Image (cartoon, rainbow, N blue to C red; front, side):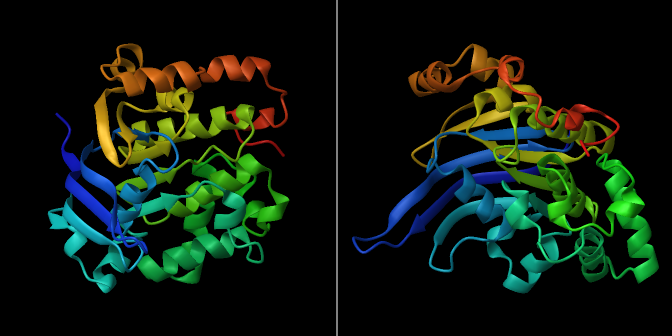
Length: 284
């Protein structure tokens, strides 16, 4: 049995409004084991992204929280800002929805990776450059030494997201939170990025908390899933069971309204960036 890496117990998050506090996450309990990809799914505003923000210590200062977020024997909700800065990026890292926004447009990809390494690990410039080349190779960006000198706009959409994943991997974190990481990509490119997440989890024993509203993506990459509605977890279990034998009417309605397998959508898509599907690298 794999060891539990992250355990969220009875998480509550409230945000102030002119009409009083609103509870946006209600008594959510989630478990992520080592080497597991766990999905958080639900409609926009259902509480899944607020839950991940709490794990990263990125909630608004006005937010009120309750419950526990246990990681490495510590309750993350009780850590100081300085302590969370040491956890964030080093032990837990994030891949955002749009690499065009998460990557700095005026900094070379190599600089964005090496600054991360030097800040968290104290590596020399030469050691950081060598590690950056390894990371770009690991996420299947072709010609990684040359890619270090490129700017984000010189990459395809799939390559930019792979570079963002390389940055997230830089300090060898135990957990990656991927917040809708394929939403901004063409359907054909999504498949390559999803395969990359799956490979990283299998080969590195990496745990991934994967947030999505797309049940087709959920079915293709996650081991277990939690379904959110109005800030609460309404269903959870092995992903195949949740999607094939849902117990809640809400889950069934989501499946009926939104479920399309990734394979079906790829069949209908234009091969706009099909090179990203290659295990040898993304499209040029």
